[in-house]
Length: 84
Image 1 (cartoon, one colour):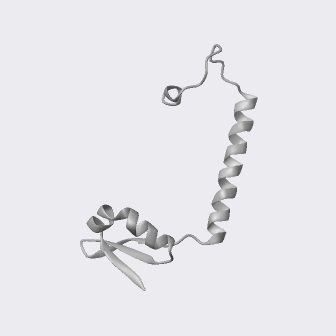
Image 2 (cartoon, helix red, strand yellow; image 1 turned 135 degrees about the vertical axis):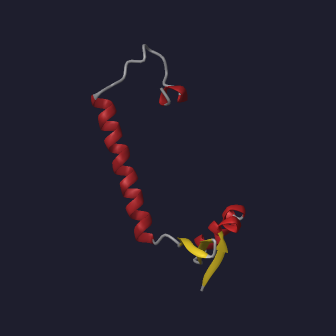
């Protein structure tokens, strides 16, 4: 069964709706009475594919950073460096 909620309800109750989706329910979010978004559980295959993509991206990043090190003059990288 698909549960319909308005975008306002979805915004106000996102955590509860997320838990319901994680438990297998499907949520249809409407905007002005028209379907706008569907929240569905991720299947095991999708979760594994996502994990593999993240792992490959992390390996690529390490390879790039190892090949092109950044000289910080002996100091440690800070979160501020990410935004510069």
